[in-house]
Length: 118
Image (cartoon, rainbow, N blue to C red):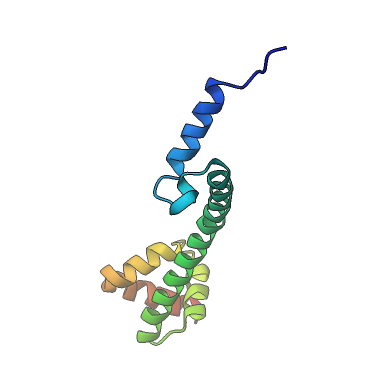
């Protein structure tokens, strides 16, 4: 029997992997086994870090909103509670952008939240 290699599909797979490993240091971009190991690890990190990025952005928005509300004499938790009671549904990203770029609108929201809690 003749020895059968996968042939073209194997080469195409290797080309795909090596393209993805382009820019990695040393053998991590040149040696097949190392490239495979490195990419598996990189894919795991990228999956993890997509979730971490969302978490970090939410933390940033909360910090910004907290700073803006405390300048207006309300705590973050009281502000969020007031918004919920007033029936205002804005997410934290939008609230953060309002606090930075449109202080007058944010003042109105803080007043709404205060009156809804009272």
